[in-house]
Image (cartoon, rainbow, N blue to C red; front, top):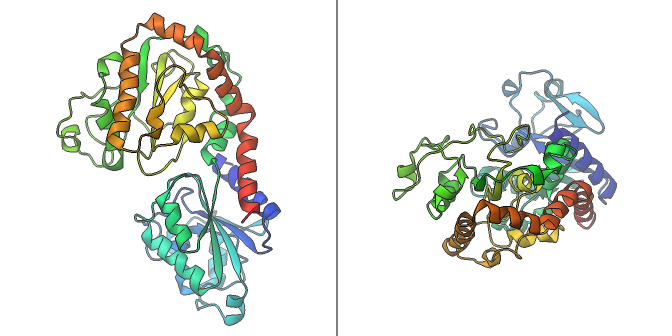
Length: 399
């Protein structure tokens, strides 16, 4: 099984073990990440793989399009066993109608998986409107399981009577799956033997739309003092650097292959990734919410200090889970600055200050912060999985 599937089973077990509802069901998007309007042409609820018994009839609002699922291996997890979705569809396809009143009166409780991508209420408004309609008309209560903090989107859902449960999902995914195999490798643990060749490293792939801040940030720092990656066009929108940022002064540069592989760390050779002193973490979301992904755990695995480009409170969020940050070596008050331009400049000042030091000075600084780097590494592997699952358990149990 893939990591997502393992975690879905774990979450399903926790729901069954913690919830006070005997009829709770756990639902996941068809693409594992979020609502996809290319898959779900007509009704968004169809994209959820859910634990329905195969003899139930579905109302029109839940209609599935069998043509989109021609693979007979596609199936749903139903009450502890796997049922082929197409066979289920054959049973249902001639019986579309609104649920009768006896079914409507029996309240259902659905937990909807939304851990891996940020919730975008406005982008996916069709899905959320239908979810609200189902909740209102069919006596179905929804709880969204997510991984974001200080989120307007979460507040929007809660204002509509949709419950939410937060847990640090990516920390669990990375510690137990993505980065677990690095924990005992000498080339990782013996970090002091790796030379420092670059003052800082800053990887960039997507740079348009909500990720334009990455290009803006590169224009705030002296790029000659570190190593960065930057394509000449955004891979999705195909817009050039000057179209995205008319005043751009940063040239394209490559030290990696620019693929979407942030869950991989190359450690079998000395590369800019593992021979840089400071790791600049460009998170998925810049200003609107705190939503850490696997990006922040790369420097933790590599025993590197880091700065984080994300919403205010991001460092405080990490510290609340037991990680340590680097306020003893530079000013981390940027984490409290609400204005995005001022916060970005404050982070750029740190990067430029590091860029002005010699590599020998950075070697000395790394020795000084060794206890923090080693604490973060051990804490990530030894404590974080239990902390995250306890958080999820508590959130579900206290609904």
